[in-house]
Length: 128
Image 1 (tube, one colour):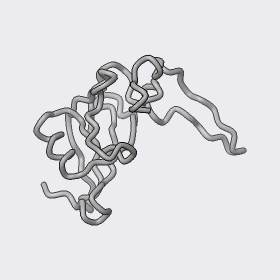
Image 2 (tube, helix red, strand yellow):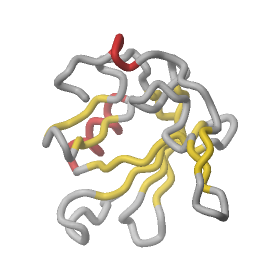
Image 3 (cartoon, helix red, strand yellow):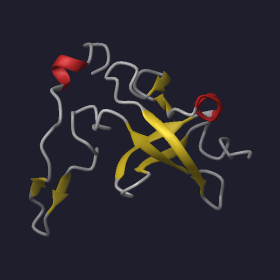
């Protein structure tokens, strides 16, 4: 499978979705190196735009994502990693999903879930 990394400057969106429940856990980006490592390791690897390097999901928190299936869109420029989320939380804030905030019609917001861990205790300052 040859993904189209050139279309968007070398990075394409990668959605992580729970393999069993279908819950969308997060959206990140991959470059070709992250893609190849994900394929060879079976664990989700992303490209951190803020740190400008590969991000092996769970390398600090232990909350790794085991890739069970990969889906590719028709334009070959977006992927969905169907994952088993180890450790419960996919979000660096400690929430299960990065999509834990709902926006009401009036623009106000509501937090839909509580964090599963305290990120201050899990991540180094370099990560945040």
